[in-house]
Amino acid sequence: MKKIIIVLILCSFSKIQGQIAYDHISNKKVSVGSYGRVGVDWSFDNGRTIGRRLNLNNMGSIGGRMEEQDYLEIAPSFHFTPKEGDETKINAQVRFSLFSNSLTTFANSSTSSLGGLTLAIPEMFVQARNIAGKDLNIWIGARLYRGPDAHLIDHFYFNDHSGQGFGIEYKKTRYTQLFVSSTDTTATVPPYFYLNIKTGTPSTALRQRMVYILEHDIDIDDSNRITLLGEYHNMPDGDFDVEIDSIEQRVNFPSDKGFVIGARWHKSLKKMKKGSFNDLTIRYGSGIANGGDGGLSRTWLTYGAPNLESLSFKKAYSLAIVNHAVLNLSSKNTLNPYLVLTSSKGAANTNHIAETYFGREVFNRKLDITIGARDEIYFSDFFHLATELHYSQRKDGTNPTANVTKLSIVPIYVPTGKNNVWARPHLRFVCSIARYNDYAKESLYSPYLEFTGPKTWGTYFGVKAEWWIWN
Image (tube, rainbow, N blue to C red):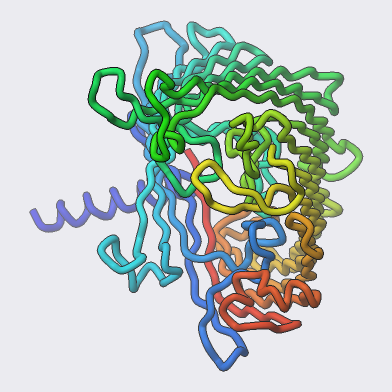
């Protein structure tokens, strides 16, 4: 009996290993995807572990992401079988993400720790694809619904429509409607709630932003595709059927709106090795749809301050231009360059600092530009060398421009033995060196400088692991 049990265990383990080799663990009913990174680091600054990015403030991962902290996503997907003869593919997907607010390592943190692990559920949706054998898809729920990204800066730069809502896709056309609401009083966006006393009892009521999104792809030929984007954002009135006093004045607001137009040109570079492409995107948002900050490009993350006289974001705008390419120069070398330019302004009558609806002071104008590239050389199937060079600059309001130039040299062991820029997992040694200009140094305009104090040079050394495995 014991021998039989041992044989069964070994067979089960062998089956799991075989499934992992094909990039995910699955059966007919369940599959699991995951993304994660974990590691440790140190610095020559008094021999300390710092764990802080060398990038400029308010830029997120734009400028390179080799110094990022531990992070985990697990995404189980549940598969349903339609009736016999029906070709519809039906999935329900949930995604769990974990990160530490205090920058401590996963092994020494928990959800009960001070500033410890935070659990989020960015996805929980049901999707029916290829309905009745036709090119028709429908989804409903909370979804990370987004298109192209520059992985080396983790920037989803054109159509990140992540949120809760529903979508319909038919052939080359996609319609999405998002319902955005929140009770975050620290946010700079128009408040998503108001004081409702129509019932005679004051209570907080939500007012959702409605986001209507339409996208369409145009295939010019087998190498060129144009994607057109249009969005309309609307927020309804707060409740004004009451006498306004100092409290209610901060939570009752008129309706507001915004528009977005954009275009993306995707070109497959047929004369280069397979997988080479160039993406050029341009997007303009107005009103409450003038885009995000901190590396996030979602248009419903309104930037800047409102006009407190008209109580609106009517004159706010944002222009975002991104060029991103993957160039497989040979079977032994890949170059991944990018350019990001964002110019944004809120609705206040100033180019510098203004107050939000809740009295918080924010910059009302910004200009940030980043240009960078990663070159990855495949010395063998198992050993790669990545070299990254980034230059970032940012101007907040009428302040001087802060800039940083950063170089990262990253030897990589790839246990799967694949000569591909997308091969994972990676086991890396990271060496990053950054040089700040005088304004960035003196204003401590970097997470690294906020910890160390004013320095012209910043350093980071770490051993890191990164993986992804998708169903």
